[in-house]
Length: 120
Image (cartoon, rainbow, N blue to C red):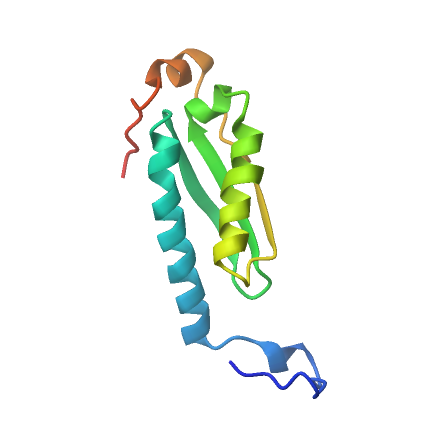
């Protein structure tokens, strides 16, 4: 989509993405998430995309598995996942996330380093 920076749009719909552009952004995002996941999985966790607004650039992810009991999971989200997404996808404006604490501590801990294999 080409936008002339000297022309003010009449309304927000003038900047709306086409279906193809939205699909391309979503594909690029999911490919990048899939590229990051093995590093998280190597430590017994996983990374899941919860929500993506490719128009506004707001992304929500969740760390799963042993990440729920890991002391550095917030650092992984901010210094790792968020930074990579914003660096490689210029349209990403913010990355929000948390940990999926639905697993109990023992189950999460038992996954151990590199032991977690996500269910498809």
